[in-house]
Amino acid sequence: MIKAAIIGSTGYVGEELTRILLQHPDVELSYSTSQSYIGKKYNEVYENFNKIFEQECVEENIEEIADKSDLIYFALPHGLVSNKLTSEILSKTKVIDIGADFRLKDKKTYEEWY
Image 1 (cartoon, rainbow, N blue to C red):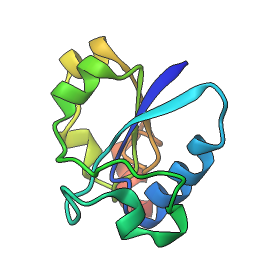
Image 2: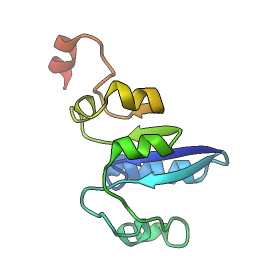
Image 3: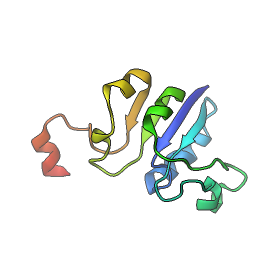
Image 4: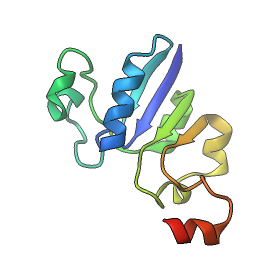
């Protein structure tokens, strides 16, 4: 079983990713972070998850989450993830950034498109 976390789970992309991961037989959604809904259960934010996902939304503590997760998904707006990741976090867990921070290698191309 893969323990996965979603940073930014209550945004549009985070909600869709939550829905997809909850259907995967080999994934356990261990952390769900939100800036706006810390302390609220996920199904209180999105009622369509009632009786499906009732985990509490937690504060974004990436270092702690990296210690306890096999994989962290970042579902944050473009430009935020590159400032949050450190080599220490990357040494502890795998990371998938849904945004564009690491999509393009050339900084000029990134700035032109984003």
